Length: 63
Image 1 (cartoon, rainbow, N blue to C red):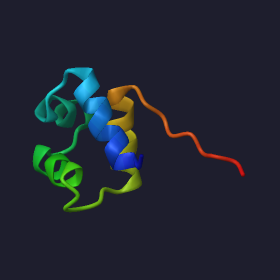
Image 2 (cartoon, helix red, strand yellow; image 1 turned 90 degrees about the horizontal axis):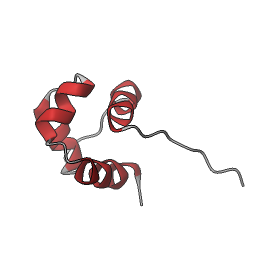
Image 3 (cartoon, rainbow, N blue to C red; image 1 turned 60 degrees about the vertical axis):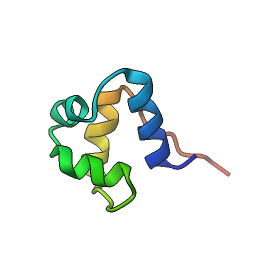
């Protein structure tokens, strides 16, 4: 599962709407919608705000 899929799943599990998540993360709802649809990428700062709003954090794998 990639980061986009993880955010999409966490959003579904959270019970929030895209609009509510966008508002909490201070991201334009249109940008969030396009990102979740795979039409664009978001910068690291924006991803961090989305993850924080969803109560998630990125864990790196050490090989």
